Length: 162
Image 1: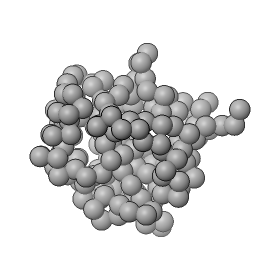
Image 2: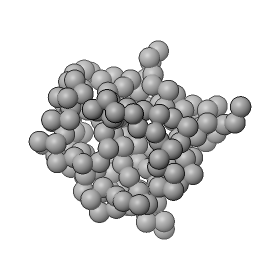
Image 3: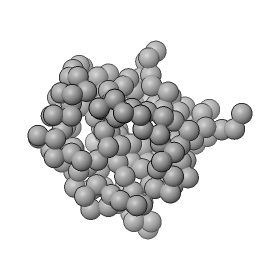
């Protein structure tokens, strides 16, 4: 079997619609696990600004709400959508609530966090708003911790191809 990549996965949006990550071939993708009741929740605002500036044919952001850390994302998919839209005007793609660690870890996050699957690095999702960078070919490039702002120069340089 060939090595999986980011484009091998199918996920669902907050509205429950199927979303094939293969549709993102040719785009750089910033993947982030999100939460509505976290000290880092204001990163939604920075993520949205980044999406408004760079989102389009060459770049997108995908949010994956997760309730793995201190019950900071207790809402339903519908409640999460309302929160993101009303408070931060989020229009970048948001997927259904998943688990990013533990026995019920979502398959995409197993790929993101295990070198044996992604071929690049092992990592552990340490908190909400951890970021993974995926290149145009669906390969994992880098991981940034929660404390790294979405508009950090290293991330912006990567988006801009510098």
